[in-house]
Image (cartoon, rainbow, N blue to C red):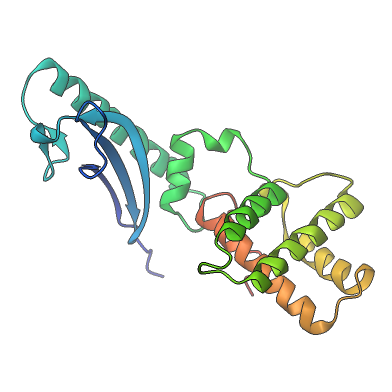
Length: 214
């Protein structure tokens, strides 16, 4: 069996079209793994005239330039360490997972309902623009059913993504078919919606396994 090798890249660039009041440009970072990207702010800025886009560094040997370049080197080194630490156990390594680990977001364990509600809030703001009201209602119904299921089955207000397993899916399927009395077609629609939410969570590094696989 041939082992698949990830293509991991880190790029620093500046936002020339979003200059700060003092005329400097924010320095951004971009993580790329197998063509998938995640961007972040380095919280650094620089005079656009002294930025080298080819090397992703500040030109010159003056102290300000050296300080920024040293900080960029430290950011790169820490990102590489995050990537290496995730490489051994992540089934599908994503740039968002590396980014989240870098910013310490793994310390705040993401929860399913909280994540789902934020998704619905963002989706709701796009209704009438490029999202439909019917689809928004569908996601809201699924989230409400999940809340009822988690409280009934687990006696909790929410569950961390790390606690989810295949039995969780089976239990939710039984909940909406039995306690909620949903039709087969509605159950199918609701499970597809849940699959979409879990796929988004996986892409952000919150969920390691694809619970719907197979």
